[in-house]
Image (cartoon, rainbow, N blue to C red; front, top):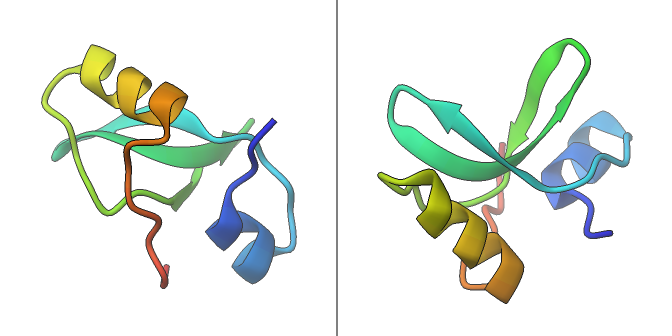
Length: 66
């Protein structure tokens, strides 16, 4: 299980990476039972399937800062 770097670094919690959605599109991030915690990817994708492929194939860029 890959965990979110920003969630771990800035929030001190280990959460699995997953595809999430915002008004800007789909992105790779982390969430807990209260909602989104971190946006980990620089990129946004227009389709969920493309974001899932990027996560699965490690074809995305990690953000450095929250």
